[in-house]
Image: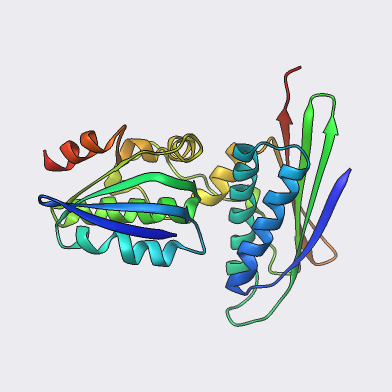
Length: 144
Length: 111
């Protein structure tokens, strides 16, 4: 199983290098480019939430992103986990935006976690040792 | 993210390349929403955009709302499959004008 663990901070430049590493690791593990881009989006939404909301503004903190990609019979099983010591925040409890609203009524915001839920098979949150641990999984199917 | 702009009669065509994501959203907002605030007609050529995250969707939504508020118009064309999918998943394909090609997008903002 190919696994990477990335240390991230709140600097704007870190986001792209983190997402680039995730995308590259997935492609190297057998994901197609469209699949890797979908997981890049998932990671971007989760990581930007942490960077923006986990701690007060101006506080320099680090957090971790773990990515595992394992070839299984059905395809490539991807597990993306973020670990941060910020304020307790359960992304799975976020309210979904109403995607059937008209233009005037659509709010700007709320989309990130909605897309995460749509693009992953499972989402799991837990709070242990004063840390948020958020794990999403996706099986990239391969038809044989 | 880069934007090259052409003028086509009364309409501006912004040809966008790269990603519209958290890192580029402020730049994208600056470059893509200025004219719709002034009530202009704007077409966004998305053929060279490989990736749009929710931050990018927000910029597009903002452009659409500003166009409506200022009696401008905005239409997108050339969405790549992965980008098109993000728009469809989020329901944005219903609130933003999307067309299959440049001619159709130009026609959409002119009407």
